[in-house]
Image (tube, rainbow, N blue to C red):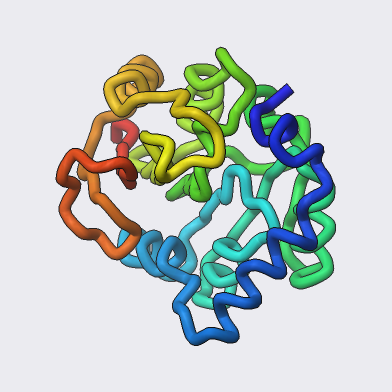
Length: 203
């Protein structure tokens, strides 16, 4: 079982969506992740939202003209995503078992994004496998973008993965670190408790 399932019981979709709706009403920009990704690849590029949740990031990227696919294990989150954007491609699958062929998805994404603490909330011991699965669906020169907390202040669970560990998993999957930031606004990484990492597959 994933740490996310242990934390939420797989029933938090509506509550999660309501939290972001409240942020929007307060005037907060909730599209930092989508804007960050849009700056990395041209409009029309294929994007996989890995751990897409309620679809906030992917729906925005689709609005910006990207060809998007979303995958998540939490049915309650996907219910919200499908209700908000039924025309988009949403699939329920475990990231550790992700097989695009089995889902009828072409495996040539220009960018894979894993936002929202996806990696710290995976099932224990599956982190390297998930990186490998995601790297395998990238087109040559494709990017894996992941943002996650590194300390208790930035996580709903105790810290589970370090940046050196994540970089090792990426290297083993054939990915090279391109850049690292402290926020989705691309602030320079300063060794703090949250990091957004950009890795690239070989050409």
